[in-house]
Length: 255
Length: 164
Image (cartoon, rainbow over all chains, first blue to last red; front, side, top):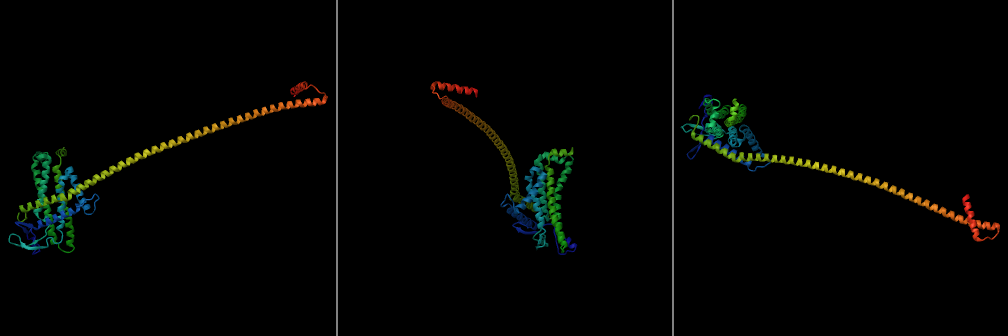
């Protein structure tokens, strides 16, 4: 992918794939995995300090954690009802992880601090140490697969396997093909949308690295980071809510 | 696929990574925070219930006190009425007694006065009789049988009495 050279940014190279950073034994760690770890450590440390000494009258970090978790829980509960407690950890982690990873990707140093190294095919390339975690398809597809499995296992558990097939079929058995196709495209659209937005944002910021103009795009990227997290989370939640919705409700909707 | 960077190994790696994060956040963030929110909700509910209970108790107490106050007022009123009636009765009684006493004293005084008058009248009569005898003796200058004289005098006096 040397399109940057095509539009006049000679010497710059951005690859769709995450670049290998270092090796732990036989495992090669890419820069996106490295960033994902940083996000994880950050979230775990902040969570630890926020809930280390819980008070009935909250203050400081606990207040912040309660506000975020409470807001997300209300949203999840509003969609899936009383079973919210079971699915909440995954849904909430989608949102919190994606938004923090997206915003972290906007920090100075991302995509700009790096080393020259081998891309594994004998080419000498620039390898940034930090690269936004969601600009790696492995990350976004991974989360989309988790969402996919969550949605359909919840459907199967609630409706039982046969009931869920009926649920998918709806009023006409032939519709099951269309519904299965739709459901299969959900993780594809989820993962590619998130990846595309974040990757494009990185490229955009790299291309628009001019004073003032760059700042304007930075503000946009902050917004996009939040919006993409919301879209991923809300879509997963809505499909989950549909899969979990009762059989009788389904019939009522068509009568 | 290579150009897009999709790699089954990294895919699995990121999935495990993410699930580990879910687990850690569940342990460190969601569970404690949601428990705390539930606990607080419960606490607020309890507080509200306690406040409602206290209010209804206070209302009951207030009614009880008002009732007692009303009772006390009625009691006091009754005592005052009784006392007033007793006082009135007492006054009437004492007035009647005093009147009776006065009447009695008056009657006794009149009685005594009458007796006194009679006594005086009797004494006066005797005195008059003796005086008359003396006067008559002097006038006729004649010694008469004193027994006869006295009889004469008594007749004279009774005649005087009858004439007067």
